[in-house]
Image 1 (tube, rainbow, N blue to C red):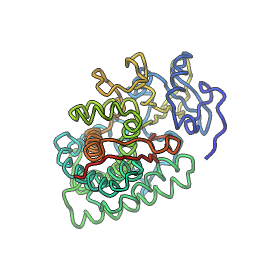
Image 2: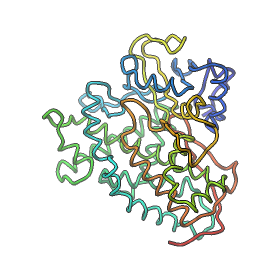
Image 3: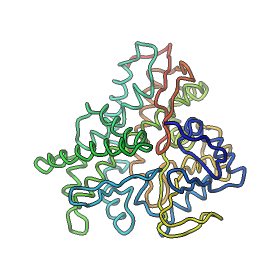
Image 4: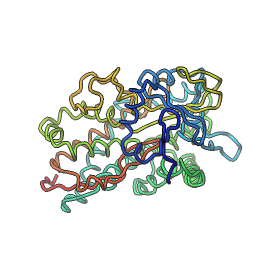
Length: 404
């Protein structure tokens, strides 16, 4: 969808601008250099965009003035059940409900809990690579990165991994296409809502050891978890657990495809991959979230009215030179790396351990089987942006490979 060109990014930013989606970092740098810690726009709704690490963290920590009721980067209609109850997840809840509901989810995504999926993820990655390795070329975004998270999330939720293509289509409809077309967003949101209504019915009749069954049997303060909260959180796991990690894996592989020195070092020093993953997360942070002002307030010298929106640009924060040395350079053995790719404050991503594991395994297995690869055509790489930024097409070629 085309947008009106931007003449002044400080006063009229556009997160769907094609150049911004493809490479937002120079724009954030220019805004910081101009002394603009908070850009403003009136497109769709009055919204603000912090450009600094301090600005993002300050807003994320301020739950008095900023609500998570609507975390979409554009105004969207909340989802409700047939009784008129809003479907609420830990990402879109405020105090006091947020803390006990988040605490309920954390055991499923603790480091030890996540490790039990590592072997499955390894075999999945090997199987995916075997499907294209003899071709000598592949789309690493479409054929690989996109295929991993939906199958792992399906395993956690106890749903069919063969539906992975449908899952990613639904998620794209909600988080990508639907952000500029409410009808598209509602269409796919309804599909997801109806899907989980049926899955919940199945678990009520025949519970298993998956996350849906766990939430249906869990309690908060001695009471069953409200069904709108169950529905909201299982929907969140599908939506948030797919696009974000898919984009992170794709961005890491995009970097390695045109930085042979980094790729060769990780092949020679695979023990460095976890550290490199943290740097890829910092340099190519995929997620931007939003908050809505609960009352009139200020952002620097910018007045904000109740109901106006701020987009929490974690990717901009992670390129702030006040916090990171040589922030525009990707240093795969960077030691001081307090990035906030997974967010900040009470809504920091509950699935961060899972995402890290998937990224580590995806890179490890790729470099074992295809240690050398390069972009087939840099101009053929396409990017999605807005809520989640990452490569959607990543055509690569590889002359040397190893069958495992």
